[in-house]
Length: 269
Length: 92
Image 1 (cartoon, rainbow over the protein chains, first blue to last red):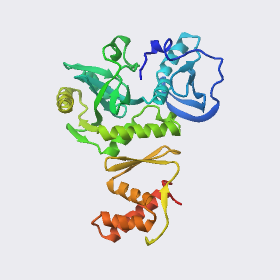
Image 2 (cartoon, rainbow over the protein chains, first blue to last red; image 1 turned 30 degrees about the vertical axis):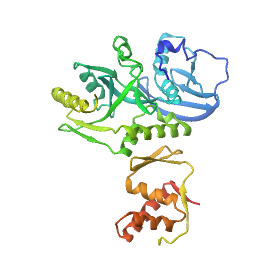
Image 3 (cartoon, rainbow over the protein chains, first blue to last red; image 1 turned 90 degrees about the vertical axis):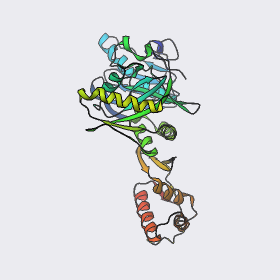
Image 4 (spheres, each protein chain N blue to C red; image 1 turned 90 degrees about the horizontal axis):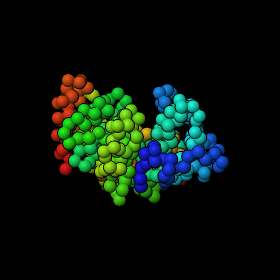
């Protein structure tokens, strides 16, 4: 399974601007969320013809049943087009990937020795800051700032560092220097604490942590929910999420990074 | 409640259970709610839905644990009350 850049969406598997086909019309759900720097409500329709997402200010997106294609209706003004492109990289692309068995974690990540290490946490828990600081160390590269697609291939867990990261300029997108997919060897759940400490979540806690950090899961219907549940259960049987508690004080970051790299090196060969 | 019943229980139609290690996770599809089960909870629910009767489940649990039967009885009863109330298991 391949992931495509946005630029490639237009001329590879993803067909755009096809207004002549009857879209899915059965109202499935309204989903509230944070998108385009605002709280908004996405309206979702479903049928055997796929999924139809209506996103305020960004337009409508039609995703094929298997997630192989996204049709959208181009906005005319440049400001609307910018919002549409930004929205495309959110729920529509994430849902399309999910339909292909590629689930997107809200996570930052780094590449170390050919393996990826992911960092989960609530907004503001320092995922991006920590990954960015780690990536300044020799032999470490930034692999994700915000969204990390993960998948099982022949029973092994992989992640893709090629999802377009909205908050990063084009010149430093991880896709510029990392391959389409790499083994995902460690997952940390970040927590704030006065001192550095690591611990291991149980199997069920690992599954629930993966579930709760999956992007756009509220768009999933029952079939997709059950597939996602199966996926997270499978992953929890082979990778156990570690908690990494650390003081969120900038002056402490060098120590934190040193401890973290030491812990990563225990597992990543 | 005395556990001498021939009643049978099963997972509700909209509930999925996955075993992960010696623990379990439940998903209620209609509400998108997830529940974690520790090893004891998983064993109890496993016995409950795979036994021919509640009494058989109870007897099987007594064989599995060193705890006094009264304690196992209370734990099973409490778990069942929770599971029924949450719509996770149902009698059939």
